[in-house]
Length: 381
Image (cartoon, rainbow, N blue to C red; front, side, top):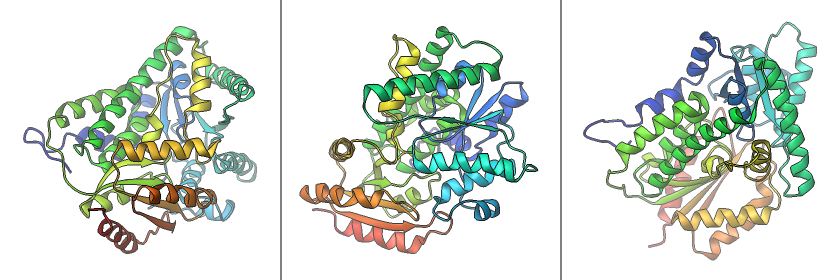
């Protein structure tokens, strides 16, 4: 943790929001505001806000038992989604009036189907209605037109929930609100590049933006930025974490406790989730369609060459000195991409380590520590 004489932990409010993940949504619900829970970074939270609802990012917990997931889900579901499924079906998210799942990966789509079937098979398990936002990420005009229509369908469902039409003025205001949150994260990420913010804290800030709501998050993040901007940078090997998403900061903390710095990441719960702002000043549904079609990072995006190029751009911009590829236990996509990405790093003399088939619930921390130590020893002089 980076310290400041005036405030020993400038991230205290952010840490609290990251730890109490449903607290703000619970307060909104108690005040009579509808709550819409959502998954991932490809759900248009702007529409949720414009409908007058509170957007709550869903996340798993590796400490949770998942008996229903073990009984009803296929064996190859990622650990974090098994936990999310368990939480939904067991009632953890019953404070929500609606759940939105984007089709940003096959596992997200399958989760939606399994939840629909679970409702039929287990009528005694009460959980909110689940709707699919069928977003696609191929860079074609026809895809954009399809996403536009899916946005209109989701808009109609949210209007029903809120009991009123969502007009352009409300949607434009919501876009500005969410953009401010993303911009605040961008500014904090710039401090991370300067080694003034730890990677673990930046990961917490990214998650807190989804738990606390964009408006409250922007205020917290700006306050933290004001205190951290004047701190002296830390030393240590500059690392990137790439691959599977992280819904807790344990691995980042391990890396940084060893003396390295996570100055960049490339996964769907990291900096790529706030890399782009939604265009303001244009027709709002069109702006959202373009954003969520082209700029919402996914586990599998087309064309892969473009994603690899952006990966290397981040490596070079952040002056990364080593990359930790973090492979999920049931991931079936990263193995196809890794060889080319490692080759691109090798060409530049940047060492890397491949942490293969990492368990979500019972990770081998000793093995992870040994791998990171070995990577740090390979730092180019």
